[in-house]
Amino acid sequence: MGLIAALPEIDKKRYSVFVMHEKSEKLIPLHKHTKGQLSYVEGGIAYITVDAHTYVVPARHYFWIPQGMTHIIRIGHSATVFRSLYFYAHDDTASPFYSKLGIYPASELLIQMINYTERWDGRHVTEKDENFEFLVALKNLLPKENNRALPIVIPITDDENVQRITRYLEKNMGEKLTLKSVSHRFNMSERSMSRLFQSSLHMSFLQFLKTIRMIKAIEMILKTKKPIGDIAATVGYMAISSFSDAFQEFTDARPTDFRKS
Image (tube, rainbow, N blue to C red; front, side, top):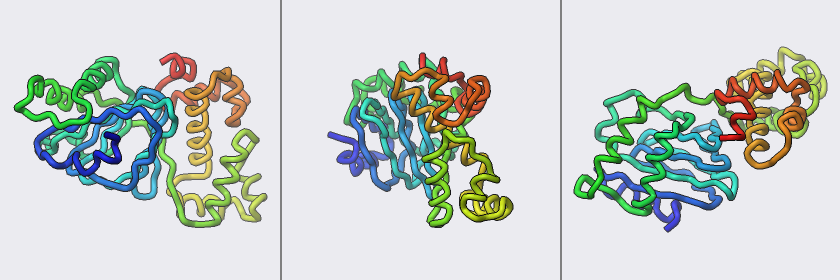
């Protein structure tokens, strides 16, 4: 049973943990659960869309989606292994962690614990089942494992002018792009361009440009064997040191370490 087919099943038992391990590329349409969702991305990249924002989840990271939060998930590469656990929510008030969406690097301990749950793939686990305490311990571990949430989020807008500009940035991110040059290209003042990004995307022009460059870099590091220097140049960084610093700011890891993991 695939995850899309399993969606109606997830909430059937209020106090259970529903376990689902996916190994294929999928778009999981708009939905929500009465349970909190823990998902680990073993390889490739996943994308979560909530309201007007898309969050990027790289390999060896996990995310938590609180109960009741409507979302879309896209598993973005056929090599991705997507491991999900849907937890009972009656004790979520025990920690603020459970009430907010977050994306975090996974420790070796957490990875091994999540992998262990594959033995329950496709079914509910309740307190009547042997080793249910293992799943309870896993959930209780999450707030203690909690690192700084990754700030990799791309806002979405219906504004056609902004869409034209962002498509241009995505297509030409390897070029030397500045607020001045892009404003000139679209016959706008720098001030108007800045206001447009803040009002439509709630982030600055430079923040948006840096974010899409980092997302592209993550995808290339995970999906290709290109040298880090080539990837840096492709996303608009002439100096590897500047690229490495920017990448670490977004992922808490240097590009070379990110690839090795």
